[in-house]
Amino acid sequence: MDFLGLYLSIPFCRSKCTYCNFASGVFPAAWHERYVARLEEDLRAIRSHAKTWGATIPAAADSIYLGGGTPTLLAPALIRRLFTALRREFAVTPTAEITVECAPGQLDAPVLDALVESGVNRISFGVQSFIDSEARQTGRLHSRSVALEDIARVRSAGIRAVSVDLIAGLPGQTLDSWFESLAVLAGTGVDHASMYMLEVDDESRLGREVLLGGERYHAQQVPEDDQIAEMYAEAIGFLAGCGLAQYEISNFARPRCESQHNLKYWRRQPYLGFGLDAHAMLRGRKGAALRFATMDDLERYLAGPAWPEPPRALTREEELEESWFLGLRLNEGVSLAALREEFSPAALRDCLETVAELEADGLLQRFDTDRIALTSRGRLLSNEVFARFLAEPALA
Ligand code: SF4
Image (tube, rainbow, N blue to C red; front, side):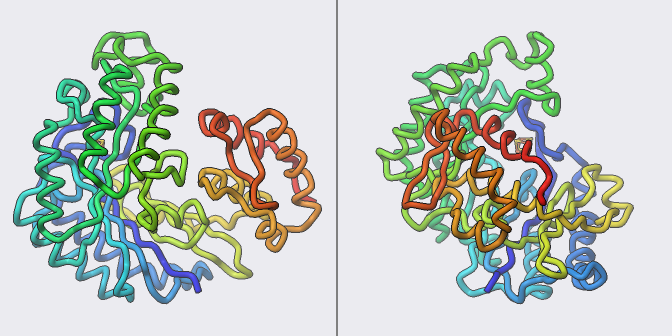
């Protein structure tokens, strides 16, 4: 039986980090209440939309994730309202994983109390670096000591599952300072870590400056690509040595502490996303995957319909492509037996040729007879690997 994942996007931030390419920003606090009211409206309305679209919403949800943004900037009363609305509209299993993202230094005591009362059992801290100068240069508002205190505070409040995010490739970062951040992370004993390589694109101020060759935001101090790749590769072994095994390109966990919510994305299980720039996937008639998303402009989102476009049913070809590029993100890889059940032999034939080529290039490996996964080199070049599956000819 499929369970549902529920994602709520809370796009409010106290300041905008230079590397951030999310649809979040510094908006007036007076908008918080309107935004929560809007979320409540959408939570109420989704069932009738799903009916119109012919989409199936699983009976119960086993994961909730509040991300953003900085959800803990909401007043405690607004946080309680959101969880009340979620539980009113959806049956949430008693063992559901309930995660809230948190920026260190931005978790007031009454907010933490509201999270605990609302059943939150996992916090994901966006630390990015435990080196104070690196955090400061990118606009983060915390120091190492504040981050460590906050991790201790949520644990003593009874929230035992804690994840820490780090970014490899921040301005001024060196291999030594990276190892220092990793060692501090290991010292916290957290059960989950996410590690991202800096994304240089024109969606962030730092990314744009790097692309332009400018000097603002310490862009000249961004490490070279091969240094960032070395940081990433070194971290995998380091974290494994601390009991945090890699289970996805950017994610590491102790046994049975993988993010159940995020696993849904890569395993193509159903989830609903509410709020600004939130994505969703449900199954429609005949089991086809239906994908849909909300707007990424806050004022338009507050004023307009949440889902301006009806969902798009993926073609069989797109479903197969997704099975590869999402499944290959996971260390467990893609099961050929499962693909054979879902897709026709003709559809798979071209993919298997691609798999053989990528195996020969040392980017994919086969294990347990029928599972295909990225190699270590394949993880560094994952976008190249995924593109090879997207380039498959149309299915018969
Ligand atoms: S990285 Fe997180 S805290 Fe920083 S601006 Fe982006 S969403 Fe806000």
